[in-house]
Amino acid sequence: MLKQIIIISDGQSNIGPNPGDMAALALDNSIIVNTIGIIDNEEESSIFELENIAESGGGICELTNINNLSETLSRVTVKSVYSTVEEMVSQELKEILDLSIEDINPKERHKFVRLIDKIGNEIDLRCLILLDISGSMKRKIDIARKSIFELLLFLEERMGKSYIGVMVFPFKNNHCKLLCDFTQDIGILRKEIGIVETGGTTPTGFAIEEAIKIFTKDREYPIYNNIV
Image 1 (cartoon, rainbow, N blue to C red):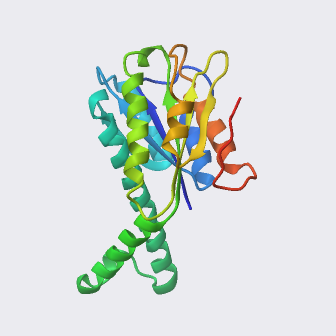
Image 2 (tube, rainbow, N blue to C red):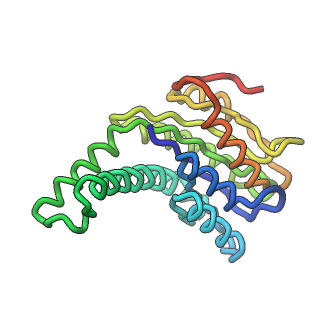
């Protein structure tokens, strides 16, 4: 089962540990970290941080405006899955045949491409979305919530099982909160993230740190719990 984090944010972190360091720690635990930047004014500092997080976490960074978030979220999720599977297949080739996919005869290479497509469609996925709900997200939060619902519907087309969880940061007096544990049920997802209030700072590093704990703690999957 593949594990990935997708951070949706419109700004730079301003409290807590370095998000890039936390993303590297996630990758050490076989968790891919992707980022989506909702960019209004294309501030260079926030773009740099999001790119750095994705690079450190072995993932993908894409920038978008809020109206295209749903399409971007689906694309990043699937692109990350196939990129990870391709890397897995490439590592196996290297170990078994001491070859990369590029070294394979073009007439035979398509077989490996089809294998990557097949595994990418069939492999199970756990995806934890870290949604920035700091003050600057106030006008964007409704579209962000809708995009998460649409992602789960989109992933239903895959043959593999897809579980979506949602963590928000910050949450009242805490750095973050898991609103919805991993689920395939859009009804549960709608209920748990139905009302989200915005405000506060942007503790991205803390959020990634807590996400790692959720992925790595000892428990069975799939699971759904109410997190208080």
